[in-house]
Length: 264
Image 1 (spheres, rainbow, N blue to C red):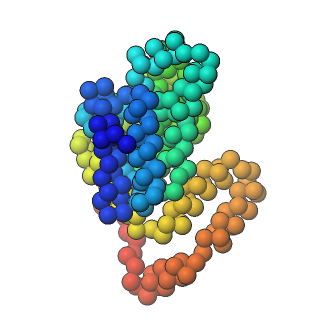
Image 2: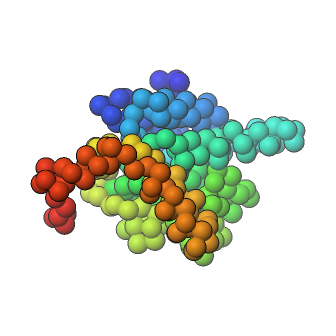
Image 3: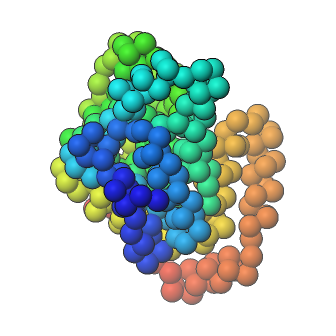
């Protein structure tokens, strides 16, 4: 992992990964994509939750289009396939986040464009500050999304809204992104990382097996029929029950666990 391209910090059970190519608005090239993948693999091994953010004024402006254009125009068919599979922000790399071992919270600000939007969509909770803006301009660039957006982004905001963004190049501000389910939280400018860490600490206190079941079972159950989904839910619920589950339930019944209350 190159410290020039990503930063990595382990804060207790929380791995904090920062995209560190601010002079290019954290745009993807193969080296950055590889560095992120290595950092995510490391986080899966030593943390209970991950936080992903961007250094500088933007989260991620997508592909480094100059690099991508040169690579694709000079490459043969094999090279082009490789660009889609393991190139900048490749779909397989984002699957390490979306269906890995731990939950991920992304802290978003500034540009969340193209591949940056695709990467954010692979995280499980998305926090945006008021400077964040979202777009999928591939149609205007004569290309197509290639890092999982057709699956992940369309499921978040709907096929209709994704079609609109891709065909027209329209930009969504943070508040509209929240209304359309692209993000779950909108905070004041500069508070996005703080909020992401706050949520990550709560997530890290959960049972590991419960977190794993949430991030890996829910998206798969969504692909099933109604009756099959209920069947798989039952299997997962029974399969992860353990002595720790009993202890946590006993703590709650004994008044030792924190009671739920609405957020002020």
